[in-house]
Image (cartoon, rainbow, N blue to C red; front, side, top):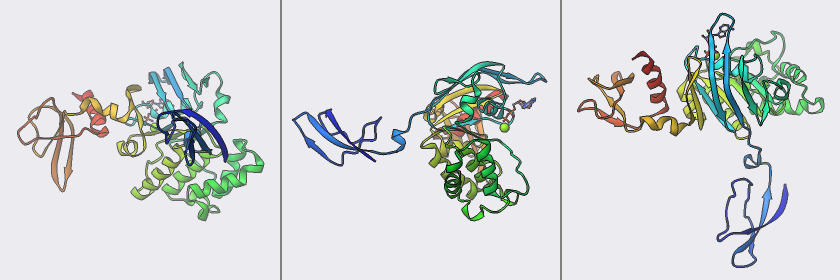
Amino acid sequence: MKIRFLLMKVKKPPYLASRHAIIPFSHAVVSQRYFVFIVQTYHSPLLMKAHMLTVKNLNKTYTDGTHALKNITLTFPTGMVGLLGPNGAGKSTLMRTLACLQPPDSGTVLFDGIDIVAHPNALRSQLGYLPQSFGVYPHLSCRQLLKHIASLKKVDKNKVDAQISSLLSLTNLTAVANKAVTQFSGGMRQRFGIAQALLGNPKLIILDEPTAGLDPLERQRLHSLLVKISKQTLVLLSTHIVEDIENLCGHAAIIMHGEIVDSGEIPNLIAPLQGKIWESSLQPPCGMLVSESYHFGKDVWRVYHHEAPCSEAISRDATLEDRYFYELNKEQC
Ligand code: ADP
Ligand code: MG
């Protein structure tokens, strides 16, 4: 911890400055308009360097002619960012491309200003990647496998044991560290996947469908782990589960058929639908159907319409799920 002195010209003592973690645990008035702050500087998320991933005009066509990424342009800020799309939308293709595992046909990817398509090695040392599915060596324990991956990632040998212990504790795997990963449950396996992705303190973490196949409790545990991690890093998470994004991300991109439909802060993604979502227990005669679900065995129809579609329709706040289903259903209209 460092102690510093700051002279600030302010009318009122500021209690938090945005770019520096300033905690005015003590201040003295020097003149009527100046305050001296003794500021406590420590490694808090506010002091972490903000990382930025920028993707421009990215294209990828597989050899069989599938145009999986169509001119993708996106900017991701630090924190947890969601990539939401149905199966086959191009999420894994984009994730693999950003992880430098396959080159795009055209386009640029900048991470903190470095062109990682031209210089993939510049990113590899700063990257943590959890593929959608991964195999493990059958006879290695969780700890042995982490050690092996750490050596592949060239983690400093003097620091590796301490880092593995802290990651095992973070992912709640300490008690099973000597068990073979092949014997792990789905949730434990995913947490192992996160632990290996975090080896070497990466600045960019790419997680392809990390919650797939998990039961609700395992998903909840994984969510709280991801929230912890994303305070300091850029975590890019792909999923087709809207709830994952709503729970975890402030920022998201919706991808369909290899194209970005929209991206930005979640409230901005929802805004176009606000005031136009109606719910009814009877099928409304007009409006675009967003979803048909059931509540205690009764029909719940949600429609998008500029006014109430029928007398018994109730206006509802729009959600990210409405926006997602709206985009999915729009294609079928
Ligand atoms: P998602 O992860 O959103 O389900 P993918 O990126 O896996 O989507 O796939 C996007 C499209 O690219 C799909 O049509 C898929 O069939 C196709 N695709 C993915 N990988 C390959 C590949 N190696 N060769 C040919 N087509 C592929
Ligand atoms: Mg996928």
